[in-house]
Length: 409
Image (cartoon, rainbow, N blue to C red):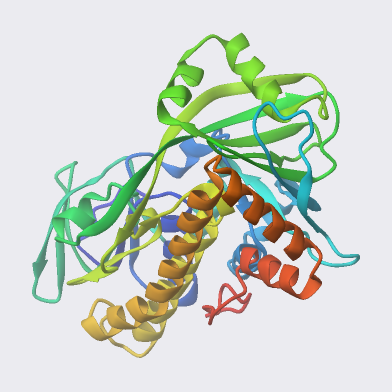
């Protein structure tokens, strides 16, 4: 695993679920392809990560096509019902304006999955497919050279890759190094992430409460008595809640959740992450492609970050695999232009949707609140319109890469 790599077809910088899925998809689709992945943390170290993601139907199909869903199914909790409320924090009653339910014999609305098992399954599959892991290590600098990019790692190792894939997060060093600008702004919010235990079963129900400070979501986890919180709050308040005494955090939690789940207990750490929108002005540069948060970081209001990243990985893997099978260079401009065309509009559409939803619901302007509540209620009463929203959440709109459709490349 730590052998020196002098020349590779594809080097993926970043070992999260997006980078791993891209590396796995390319290596599994093109036997003999030279694929390497570099990350400061070996994938095995992610086993205790309690962050949770909503895996929509498109993401589940992709994981199945990659051969890892069977290993994850027992760890995933089906979301059978979702309710949406809109209220002030101290309102005695929170009317439900919108509900989504699993249809008989149909797929769940989504599956909730912890990051640890997801990364472990992808990492093991990628290793079995022949991906070379250069961990722990990190990319210091890259530079274009004839036929590729020369990559210098923190360990001093140097290699040349026909294509470098930046999966190194919202503050991507590779994106900055390539001179790719971003459009970005802060929402003045932070997302508090925590896992809770509760005395009563969640029964597969997810809740999203739109409060003036931002959306507050309670998402069911495996076992019936644990849930994940995604809690948007003003940054100054979020910082105080995370750093403050546990009993104060618990009291604010109870104000938002109520007594439906019985007594609540926080498991592990409470963490807060600043929320904003970051959208790269382009997703490619010379022999470089951006995927995941390196290309776009959106608000978690619709829970689409993971699924958007999976689409990036699937689209890039498809254009690269087709090029490699034809004996072409995977890092040339025509290959990368195809990836850019495929992902540009879909990403912009999702970024605009999440930005608009957050601005619409993260306020207490009474006339606007009345209009949005009327709109939610109207959608709830119009099944065809409701179906459009459900399909969008499942990742259905627009042309999809083969993996997202559940088909091998």
